[in-house]
Image (cartoon, rainbow, N blue to C red):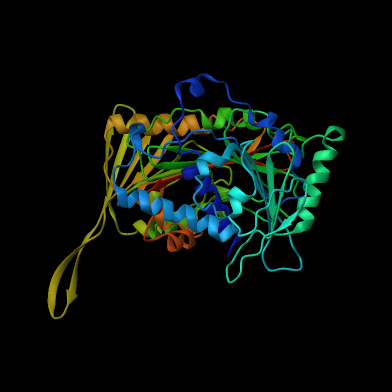
Length: 486
């Protein structure tokens, strides 16, 4: 099974089940511990390739805090939870998970060169009165503390092979006995060294679910030349569930380079002035357009750009909703472009109308064609052009004045993110059905297959922003994905 699939399954199990119990009024008034102050951090060995930390103590998957009254749905959720626990090798018997788990958990993966799959280490806190017996439900009772115990289940798959309970009520379970020993040693040496990702957790301490890894996964902007195996950047992803939507926000962080989550505030807290909410919104400079974004535009748009005699540093904005597309770029003496020179518009008739300072043009074409011994009229799609306020806009539909103002404001707001020292800035925002068609979401197909009869996960929205300034060696990269859970 793929590492990403295992990780996603485990994360979903945490988000949906570990915190589903009702929280009392007194509990709500208590201030929970910040994630960077959790005692469980002392048990994390170094050199993990993926690390998930959570201190989630309450969660409700149903809108308006109402329980799902559909008994079938409840049974399906229980089936998913039990299947995941069985796969790991945990058997709760008659126990309930909410009566055992005590709101702290870590899941980490480690490279194993001798095996095809990675090793897993899971650490979580249990309530003082609970034991390993409550987790394994084996025929013979296990009461040992400070002893690594082998998990053996005849004729059953269990991904976890060893388990250990500390004297401060933490369970350490792993597929490799050596990882448990490393975890114990890490705890003993914790006072002499700081937590591996201590600097990267700055600004994330109020989060409840954080995934840390050195790989960004599949991305529009991913480049092996920029993000190679020796890269020291850390990708931190936070998880939130809101109105049956799972929201993932990923940040490229590096404590040594002073790149923390606050670095992203200016990029992610801007108001989008384009109220029409296009399905695809792309902003980029021309020199990186083909490299990053050509898979997201249609053939007509792509052919237009191939003909452009453009400046590499020219900024461009593309908006696409249904069959309507729109391309915007700056229009000045240096970058002025004559649309009539486009081969795509050759033999088109042009009509121009000026309104105040705005110049509107339409390119249209109707011809007669002989086919099957008959004459037919062939009408080509109209192309519209607007020169307004230093911008030139191409589209396949006529734009009114109010929409023109919104587009102009959106373009210059995005451009404001590029100061004199910024040589790379791109933003891609994908909404609605288009996100399900983008190839870099394909990993979720495996997960959908495993739980297809119980839980459906679909991509609703995706946002990616990349920005690099002088003298930065590597860019900062932000990714936001919204998944709908049904």
